[in-house]
Image 1 (cartoon, one colour):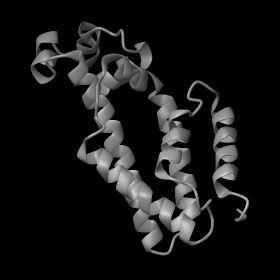
Image 2 (cartoon, rainbow, N blue to C red; image 1 turned 180 degrees about the vertical axis):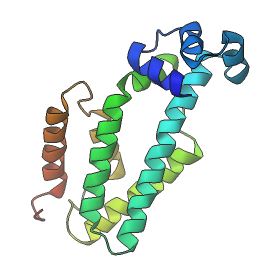
Image 3 (cartoon, one colour; image 1 turned 120 degrees about the vertical axis):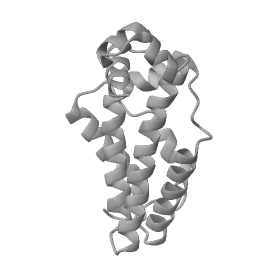
Image 4 (tube, one colour; image 1 turned 180 degrees about the horizontal axis):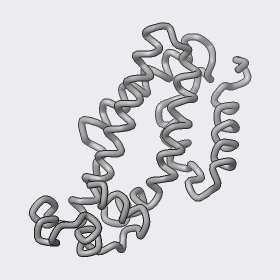
Amino acid sequence: MNAAREQITAVGPDVGMEQIAKAAGVAVGTLYRHFPTKVDLVAAVVGEFVATVADQSEAAVERIQAGGAAFDELAGLLDDIVLATATNHAVKAAAAALDADVHDSHDVQRAQSALQTLVAAAQADGTVRTDLTIDDFYLLLSNAPADQTPTAMARWVDLILFGINGPQAGR
């Protein structure tokens, strides 16, 4: 899986299964036994990323339940996801190009539930806009400037956080 993630990230959706197999140090037949098509392989790589986001989101909820600040957890999660998306930019492009769909997975549902809890907690304590929705959060993430420098991405996150913080709450 590591070789597939690295090759898709480096080359994009046009990377060949032979190149992935070579990077993994296995025969292409072995790769095809585990992943019958490239779509299956890309879906597995994207699914791995979604599982990581779900784990991070649930951990943020646990920290809020233990007394952590909702806005800080939401901000940290946004920052982590934007940085991770930057390193997985080609994976996202490959998934879109190959129609590797993970939108109905258990991990997507876990991430959505945890994110909804984070947004609701931040709204309840007045640190984010009352009209912020989970769809807004997804819109922001889907438009993250993954092709920018880390400094530019950090600036983008700061601007987004200012925008979701809203006029009624100070950061």
